[in-house]
Image (cartoon, rainbow, N blue to C red; front, side, top):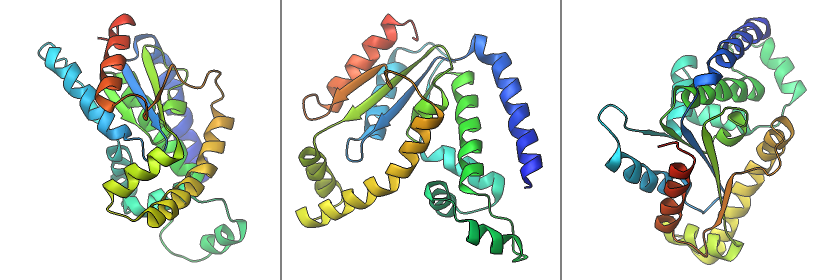
Length: 228
């Protein structure tokens, strides 16, 4: 895909999306520190919502599916797209790639832009829980939604990762450090591109509240805001 065609596509998506914003949502976007169980929270919240949902008004959860959708569009493996999404730009690498004659590989910027467009379309369509993938930033200006952030002290997150992935304490520290380094670049990009103060509507400490308790509180907030 050329830069010109991508720019036209993104412009069209943006224009069409803005026209739909009036009737957007409802949706919930969940952001989390590594080791805080954002997808698990989404599943718990989904059960609470759909237990009371009217026929034809059930909600859906999206996490890896967002990247899978882009993988189908580009006919590329999700793992490759995820690596490129997190990868810092390399001018020399891009220069040689353009002369390699190989199948065009989208840049990290192109991948992030397209994922933002996919996430916005889901949020505008409504009745969805969006976990990670930059969903909070992508929907910052979309009305009729709620953004949630999960955080916890490092010691708590280390224990969660060690248990979840059957790692030793030392292995868990290495795993968390590697993941945080990967996420730091993306976090700076999204904070610069989608500035908002405060960054989230609701922020929870997972070392204080269980995920089930947090799901109950988010569910209550959704009712207060008339999202359900």
